[in-house]
Length: 615
Image 1 (cartoon, helix red, strand yellow):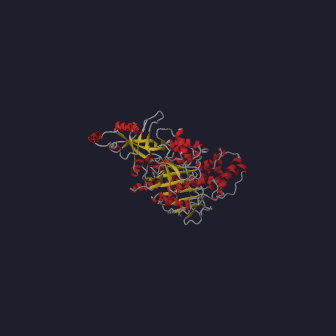
Image 2 (cartoon, rainbow, N blue to C red):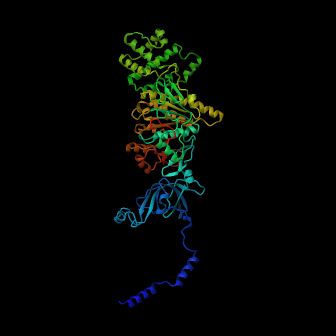
Image 3 (tube, rainbow, N blue to C red):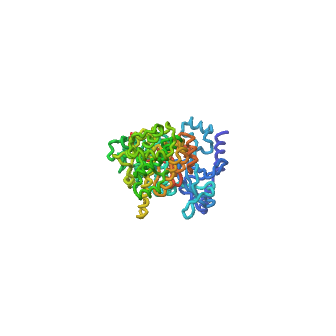
């Protein structure tokens, strides 16, 4: 073909394919008559994505939302969306529980052509176009009046999804409160706060996680925030790490983290340290230190038996000696000594408290007397002068007690009681017991430093006495506030290493002690008294204790068995959060409070105060 023919052919093609101007003008006129150029559905303005069709693998309560690649970064995990189902005119609220994921358009992400283009093209022009995908869990259906009810249907396909503003998220998730916990992970604009109202904080809290997960930071942040609201706080510190929280943190890493959050480094105000008489505090430089002793009469004899882990034979002898001691105190007019005190005995419940004015020395001396009389009928020299001076009366009491006669078992019991008695922690005349009236004052932080006891039995005796004393004083404060028509004092008791106080292995042998804690927890909810159980070994917490807890802060937990057990005790946490629990970084936690609409993964605020064992 010569050049002339080629030009003729091209001319023919141009003449065939060219669109006449008249046709173009006609199309333009028709478009204008139809309303102009299609600019999309005005209802879809500001939509961030659209719902997809369901597949055989779809789950009830969740929908898939596709996103243009331009909006992928605008919808991170835990974001809330509003889905407008146009076909049936319903509106739904949902939370992103998986994603966002980036997927190539029209191809599988593992297709050979995609992999080849990515690797050989080194991420440049050969990369396929892509879109985003998130899985949204439906929270509820929005009504016309603004109310939200459980979703009874699902959004239909191709329904637009709109991201909620930070203010809307706070209202929907109910994360507004006076006690700030942190910010939602991946949503720095969503602060997590807990309200100090009766339905939240008096409901007991569990702070669980492995060592290094950030529990101490959480405790410090919680104490600092709660103190500023005027709550009375009692912190049982088994390691002494909180004894310097009145000072601002000096950890440069923590200071930098605080700056990123816009928070100041500061100490907790109005802190007081209490330590057992004869024991040292981990922070001797603290300006407010108070030694204290234990009062044996404040402890239920049955709780003491459980804490000391006495055998069945020793328990029988201990209770026989306890009854004999009560009779001796009464006959010698140590207690009761008047009619009013006799009336007091009518209301005495030994499952709750001990016999008034009975000391550990009284019980120890009675055990010694019984064992000596049973052995060779000698009356030993004892510490209680009233017993020694009234030998005839005491002998008569012992004879009437019908105590078992196996001497070695009595001596073994004497040895167990003597070991505790020699510590010099009970009923010391030069040191008073805990002053609960002073401890339960608004804004006061009382740190019970047990770092120098070297005995879990002693720690448990302290906890048992303190819980009972705090409950009694809180009852009085509550009644006084109601009488004056004032808001009751809010009190928080934080128990470190809670698994050692009520362990899963010993709960069957500590029914009395557990019942005491259960009664305190039940009554505390009504009287603004909240318990906080803190442990790095949640696997040792019994189900009975887990059942008392309503609010949770879960840091990293590696043990799959523990995670599965917690899933049976804690409702409302979605699978995606449970799966992330073993891999949480320090400072991250899954937070679930009764005030919140749903649990969230939270970045806990850095501690503003000083931790002794962390700096």
